[in-house]
Image 1 (tube, rainbow over the protein chains, first blue to last red):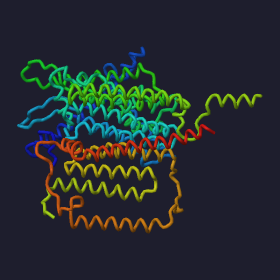
Image 2: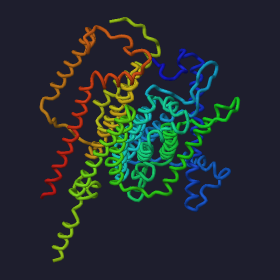
Image 3: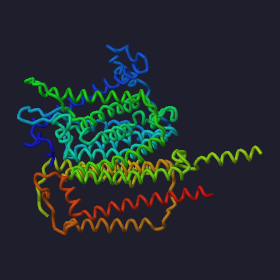
Length: 408
Length: 185
């Protein structure tokens, strides 16, 4: 029943197997927590460099212990629960934010397969048969943390933020899912282990190249929007929403949200690497007993590059407007990912079908573009998107007519 | 019914899933606050997902979480938040007179029917029991599901897809028409 794709359970569940699983969980968790601390430090330091500041420097060498100091400070701050809040949900929300971030990392393969005491041990915490679907499920669940936090605060701006968050995450989930389908199509496997193995034969087999770069770009944008990282962080746009969904949070609960954000950043960098950049695949030098180390190093290097890119986005890109976020998701990414999936599926059947599909997609995109054009000229413009409840703002001509009449 | 000896892990998993499902379901009915009710619903959905995994239906479990917990209940919450359903709402007036006895009758019929079906036969195929794995050895769950959907049940699948698209288009048309009349004022 439990035996899935993991060869560890192939010979039954014994004491040794349970011990190995426990060690994997503990080591994975510890290493990952360390990575989160490092990531927070790295983000602050890199952003400081980009903004010609010094950044954290007081605690530890290069300010490395700054995060620990911050954590300690947050622990001892007063924990406020607003009077208007829904107490139960208010306290639950930070954990709902944290748990999906934790669970997703469990399926990321960080290395090859080790052989310990006659057991084949895959270097990933879990390798469930539904594999990458766990990632999609958890990214679907992660919306609850933000959404309920905003609602439970009993305050206006957090509520707006949570409504934005739920709309944004649902919109981008479709594009995310469809690009994952393209990856699954060429990998012939749902498990992350299988996806990584299918890319193992060298750089030309990495999905980023094999699928054309488009799915990777769509996935990257969609996952950034799912995380509500800049430039898609309309959820916590401080110029519009005070602090967003976590305005009313303080002390350790705020720290949990903060940690969840950075956990998600690392996890999603790792997921990108797994899906499109071969995961731990890379050149392994012929060293006798250390062959298993190099895949891990490759994985860490690739993940670090993407983590850096997220920091870079935050420093370099201005935040999108809310209606732009929605337009990009629904009108660009979803049709594009769908079309690309059809083309990839066509080429998998036969090159001829691939070209047929490409022609069909081209035709469909022309039709879609005409539809967008006509739709844009018909509606009252982007303002209508911003006011879905109650009266929409009056069109400018009518406003002007009203004021002119008053003056006259 | 075949008398199968269940292993302890299976029992633990089943009991956990069952408790999650039942507690969540009772919560949906008993809790006053609509947001809390939606959260209870998520609990139930997760319980069902666990039950699916225990039946080796991994794909179904994942889809259960992605679609129901990840999208549909989020939309419920979205609507609840948008409509601003207050925490101190008093619904003492019944919108439909006599719905409670009718609902009780409906529940009694449904539960009775389920019990009879469970006791006498397999509810889909009419067989008295369905035991063992129907999976062909060597192929995955998803593989088989995909093969079934795209060969045997292709028309049903496509019909469902068309139905959903029609529903979406219909919803959009209805929503747009309202806006057009508003502009014509």
